[in-house]
Amino acid sequence: MHRWLPLALLASAAAGCQREPRRLDSVPPELQGRVDAARAATGELKKALSGRLQQAMQAGGPAAGIDVCADEAAKLTAGVASARGVTLGRTSHRLRNPAASAPRPWLRAYLDEVSSRPAAEARPAVFDLGSSLGIAEVLPTQALCLACHGDPAKLSPEVSARLRARYPDDRAVGFAEGDVRGVVWVEIPK
Image (cartoon, rainbow, N blue to C red; front, side, top):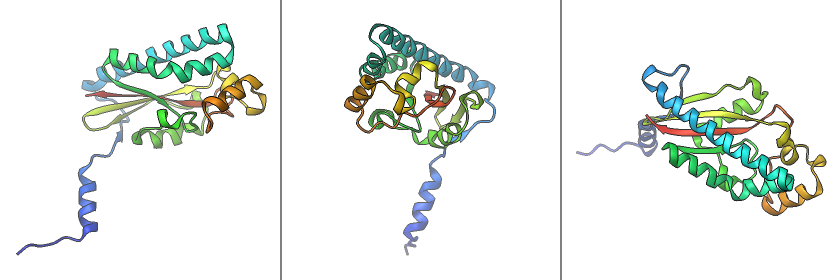
């Protein structure tokens, strides 16, 4: 004779089989090398993207920086990710391009936590994702960022027009220097 379980009980049991991401208070020594490799990837991406943005903005002003973010940032990210053998991205609690930079599910609580405090107080985090690790580091809002991410009333008309054209649903404005602008994240196999 078959015994049938209520559907809600089966769903609950199935959900229990999936491993929830767990934030690590300390990194086990055997995983420290993987965390270091992930942090090297985030550092490389930050340096590459910042350098390219500064170059574009010096040549063509803040509006040229918007074009770099729209046209080149994903390629720079993919190049670093491929070279480092990781999955890498950027996200925020206030997105400019939700289709390209929506947060991974394991990042949502961390984003909520860090977005309400100054970037200087937000610490990187490491998550056990099962067969991989997730590493998150904040992106602080710097003075240079304010030309495109600052108070909307203070953005230049050219920047405002370019943002409307490129990102009609933009929510990535209203930041002040020192705010958490977003997060760079890495997923790396254990």
